[in-house]
Length: 238
Length: 275
Image 1 (cartoon, one colour):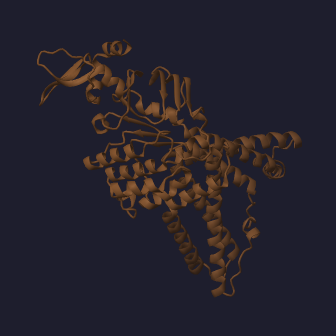
Image 2 (cartoon, rainbow over the protein chains, first blue to last red):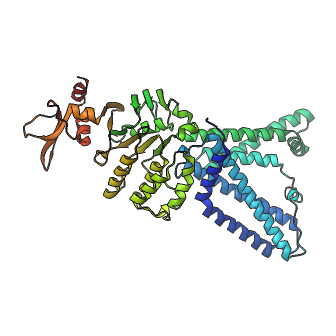
Image 3 (cartoon, rainbow over the protein chains, first blue to last red):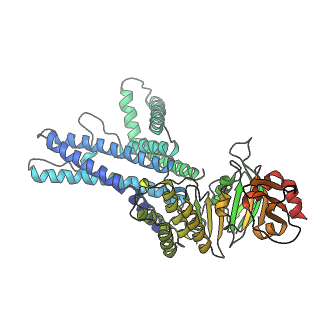
């Protein structure tokens, strides 16, 4: 019987990727661990620890995401071995790609937390920011909802699946257009509802986006990820 | 096993790469797909693998449409591409990466290939020569033991002893329920191996016959100086060529002479086989 989703085959795909990339992944993990511990040691001096941890976490997530995008881009556009003719369904291959993204993120988060706890062992005055605290806004800066981050990440991800060259540039251009469209719709809705086009518009628009657009953003994310799946399917045919 | 009916394909609308191809691939036979450069041999293999979709006509492999790329279909085919691009891992890891995907994978065949090709499982693929990389890829292709094996120029890059080992391995491995389609223009390398010849010319299949049929209708031999032939060429041994087999005596089929004869006297050869 033909199945489109088999955990055993997903395991094989993950195993194949691990065998192929284990050296570079372990090297990167080692590098990140070193940078993190070294940063804690040299930079931390009892000042705003929370902001420092949040900043490192944010930069680390960004770097991990960029590395992940490069990883999938190489895999799809310069495949080595038998990737496209391997007996696994498109769904399995796509799920594996997404799951690997999650694993990348978890690996970074794991190193980040481990580094903090290790550092705390040797520096009693040091306080570790909670997991939920990492996603709180920085002082004086409004917190960008996770839905927006997810949506923007999915656009960059799609761009790397679709385009071999200039994927990041195209992705960021797409995001800029998306933000313009988003701001335009928000402006239209807010100005219609409040008849207010003054300075308070920005705050109201943000408030509007946070309250009403989160589900829309999540739907957009799912749609973008589905397009990514279709693109991968298309790539299988040369 | 594989049926193509009136398959046409073009990479661009105006320019066809294949025109009205009909072909019936039967099990237990090694097919040699011959043609000049750019005649669409690789394209035809890719259509049969489901990597390209025909613009018109139908292609069925095990009674399924390859373009659906079902897992059970992919488990039954293996394509060895002309250009080998291996991941940067050891030979052992390379086999470990892909072997579990093929339920028919044979460790016995793997061992035979490793032994005869003299592969070192600890070697890193990026440090191997082109010929050695080809041996690694051929090893996986043969060990995968799939019912259909497509090979695109498998002997390119192999040294002379390795070509001989390749022939030996392939000849000993082929089963009655297995089809092997080898696209090549290095016909001499595979002459003793091929059971049936398919020639592509001008985007069409112009010839599709078994070696038995060929040797029954054509004779490949040294010619008299003034003897007329369907195709002839001068060699150090004298004039050799292809003539109509009127005596009924079978000769060894020279694929190179056959191919050249087919290209130069297509119409006459077709008449001989249709008679």
